[in-house]
Image (cartoon, rainbow, N blue to C red):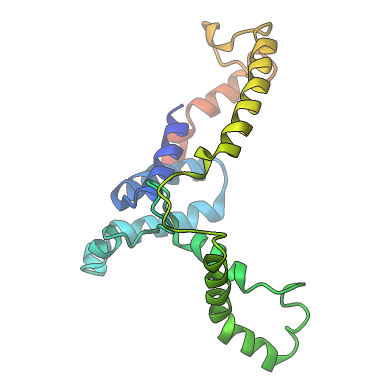
Length: 209
């Protein structure tokens, strides 16, 4: 559960533009990535964490810029609806600048590829302006998409389905009532001792690595 809360705090840091919480979560995520053998993530995330942790020394004033809504992007007035900068680029410039078939059709033509690279941000601006003109997407709303009538209706339908699943699961063993060892939520069986040891000591082993 501690790891689950860590991931939730990591997401919250982005949605609320909390750079300090983001750095704190990175410090705790690094050992987990090492112990789980995610080598590339562990290697580059460690460098990323050290860079942010020493930002005041390497780039004075940069931390204040990040704290001033520079760490994540808000595309609407929805509270806690901010997203990461790289995801914003994917949802705007990269998305609107895509052509049918991608760049495969003209990537071998240097002039065509150069023209596409230079003008794709303008193309994205035109697409965004067109969507705003026809009210397809508005940044003035302060409510979440999940609060719309259609979304509520869909949530109620899914809730009924999940309720039936809960009734079905009630006939299974409750793994939280087992006194000793870890139990698989899927099978209800007690896991092997070496597996349990790895799961319970994942953070400690990650720090040792």
